[in-house]
Amino acid sequence: MRLFVVSALFLLLRVPVFAQINIAGEWVGRYHEDQVDRVPGDVNGDYTGVPLNDAARRYAGVWDVSRIGVLEHQCQPWGAALIWRGPHQFRIWDTKNPDSQEVIAYEMFYGHFMQRRTIWMDGRPHPPAYAPHTFMGFSTGRWNGDILTVTTTHLKKEYFRRSGIPASDQMTMVEYFTRHGNLLSHVTIATDPVYLTEPFISSEDFVYMDRGNQNWIYNCEYTNETGSDKYRVAHWLPGKNEFVDDWAAKHGIPLEAAWGGAESLYPEYQPKLEAALANKTPLTVRAESQPAHVPADRQIPQGEIKTVHVQGNVYMLVGAGANIAVNVGDQGIIVVDTGNADMGDKVLAAIRQISDKTIRAVINTHAHADHTGANEQISLAGKSVNGNPATIMASEAVLAQMTEEKRPISARPLNTFFDDQRDFPFDDEAVFLRQLPNGHSGGDTFVYFRASNVVVAGDLFLTTTYPVIDSKLGGGLQGFIDGLAAIMDVTVPKHHQDGGTYVIPGHGRISDEADVVEYRDMIVKVRDRLQDAIERGLTLAQVKAEKPTLDFDRRYGSDTGPWTTDMFIEAAYNDLRQSRQGSNRP
Image (cartoon, rainbow, N blue to C red; front, side):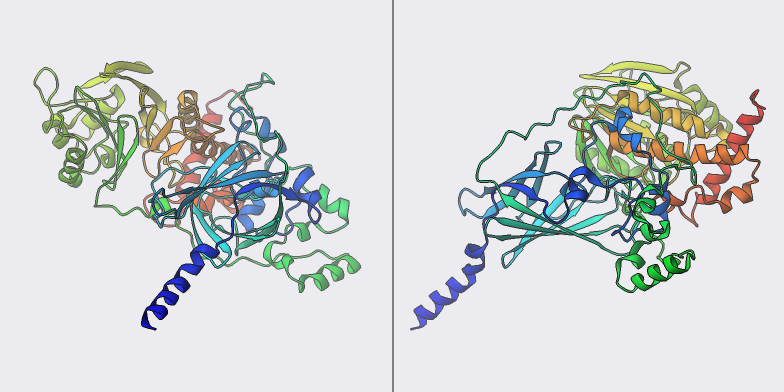
């Protein structure tokens, strides 16, 4: 009897595993309820059904549909939050442990954009905040009865809707897959602290494909077809979008109803709308009350060094005050930036965990102490090929700045260059140094390791804050934009704007070209708004009152700390105003 009970309990414990439904197969969208939204697609000005906040309203309100024709956006796929909302078919299969036959992962292939996605079922943790993001993100799953629950993080900046409603790279998605015969139901709950006031819920149904088709190939090759400026950013100035109220006018509703966010999602809003239409009075959107948001990549702890392999010969060290790159070859090690002075011992220990080869050279991207503070210690711990301490390299402008600061001779970059570019071989790497004269500061340099296909950007590119413009050292807003354009000139994506050339920012997470493009786009939009304000004769106080950075503040802004939103606006405004006064423009 005891053996029977034990056997029965064992079978009961095993039931959930064997009871999991089979979701493998090929599935195609069922559009009987939402064909207009998913197939022809929503249009500019339709923001209904999404609990968007003021930042999302601003972003969507200046969105220009011609953006998809811009060089870097032509082959950009839809992200995981949007891809379900279009004409869509996908394939699912599982990968099993050959011994236990337990499912390790579900693999997905999306016919639209040929996107690949893995849903890990083996209990592995999500990557740290400084890991790369992709358009499909990093997904883990678990079965709750017959419902597959999937959690996705590490998503790139993309969209919730084709009408320009943004989805930030801080978004988290929870999905639920349920099969009923030949139907597969999919529900998404998206949480985005940058652009949503509450979770956004959407659902779709898919039908099992008894017969396959050949619509699985999406070839895209980006090209500058129009002959226009390849660096242009398509957007409207706030309040200038000529098409933003077309959808509301077509359906005879006030614009505020299409832009109402969470308030307009619930039945209580209907009487309000009817009263406004009957009395021809304007609707009002309730004021937001959202707590301050701190991006995940700004929360990386400082003081303990974390090491991550980027690709090829290149590693990134995180936690020393600024990101550090380490290139390991047969001849030895190149270190790009060295972090804060008090972190030298930990930086050296982290390098030794990677390799015990000799440190041959240190390259400084610029002069600031959070990037160069441990120069002396790292240099003295190494040896150049002529027997001296490891060479410290930088632009001539950086040496001049450190000399002005009276840094020790042994901490200064005595191996300098004047030209825009310098290159040299190091093992199987071709190392390129590109100098930008007036970006983050004067004499900024980014480093490109060609064989490893990694760019080390220094503070010419950040994922944590608005551009830090050191005006005293010659930094400027347009120089910053030019620096990002130069980085974009050497970055090449692997597949539809994912991967390929990785970019290590001065602060924040590992990125690729798509991330650099989004950052560049943000700066250009802010620049154009500031230029427009200057041409209208607005003072700095009046410019701040117009909130020129509203759509990006919850991602890059801050009211406290060493670089606030106000400091960025002020530096950018003064730089543009001085540039305009120095030109021949009326």
